Length: 618
Image (cartoon, rainbow, N blue to C red; front, side, top):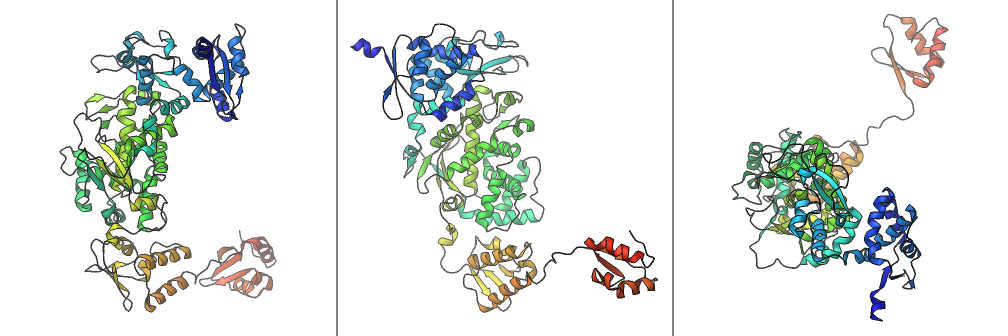
């Protein structure tokens, strides 16, 4: 009886939609490659009784599996495809193969899941065996010659051979191995169940065993935004094709007076990291900002706009790297990863700390094909160098030294803008990047508003103050700021003319400066009432009423379009004709300076009429 149980294989009937997805992917392979994949199961399952549990919990005989295993020869490609789809579409079936692996072989799979690409040397370090040739044996390598069948489930890519330039030739290539993205996403929670459960990364308090630095840009970001707006309007913060240099950032840092993540850092990239994030992302995102928004929404839109510029975004987030080329950055997945992270942040709880590791693993599960940031052939065209560790970056450390620091850099950027609070330790000498020490994040009140978890936002500066933020003079339409810093002073500055002593005069010209239509005026009045003048007096209400009336006093005439001509001042007969002829008067207008407007639709009829008087015009 025990032997019968040992010889039985229990599988699970897969979902048809998932199975169809695998079919579309596998059908691109030739029959020989499919046979190599199926052989990994065939040698384990042949001669054993195979059953499966269907979606209703009933035990069935999986005909496609049994039929394939029972055949000796003349197996059609479609039969192999049906078998593989059954085994892959439910990860519990694939585990029958995974569970047959030795401990060292499982470690190879675990390493592939944790670093995405493996080199032949990585595999040798784990197993003590050569599963694939090294670069010296793979000159102009083509095909799978010399690669162990233990790597049959891995995709093969060629990349620059690992080593210093003195020890290798420029044309030397090396083999790197990675898993299919569908298989990757399915196996990740199998090998890392704790890390893949995001809820298990939530904490009420930070761990006590470490010395944490915590930072949030929320207290000062609205004040910083006002300075950035003024610099931008004065053409001192214009967008360029390259990120701001360190000398420019030092000047901006003095103007912005921002708090930094690492204020005492000796490394220049660290000392001005927040200033770099703010200035570069602002300059990127501001150029697409078209509508008048309250400051919280302006911050959100600027940040989101900046995520669509991978050629600038990656260099700003990765100050420890050099060699990132524009053509390679254009083909990167930087924007896709950034937007995936943005969407994930909106699903996180507001008042709890979340381990950054949990965010990394959730992004890997969401869409692992984007997580290396570059395809292997695109990355291979760049000579990327890690200046912090003083070595080259190759495919097998692409995820650890490029992808993870990029995600952490984005989280630091969100903290710089005040959307989240971050907890981190000092940067260690052996850290792969300047952002590797980031450990925990949590949403701020501004972040909860930005990601739509709450509908209103009260700045932390405002909530701590007693009394009003502004004093209003209805007679002279002057507003005085009563607190410093005042988070809504930038909003007031956009609608008024600055005077001395934190005073601003609201004039029609200044109030309408950035309005283009009546709806803009309505929105601006609503913002003014919400943040500056919650209880408007009669004088202010009269001003608002006047602005609304004046924005509708002039309307474009709809319907008739005119062609403009000029009549000769010396031709008195023509002037008389166009003035008294009833037909011509019906479809034309006289204006000063001998201008004559003819309805475009009736132009030919008017020309014909004038011919009767002996006049011709084009």
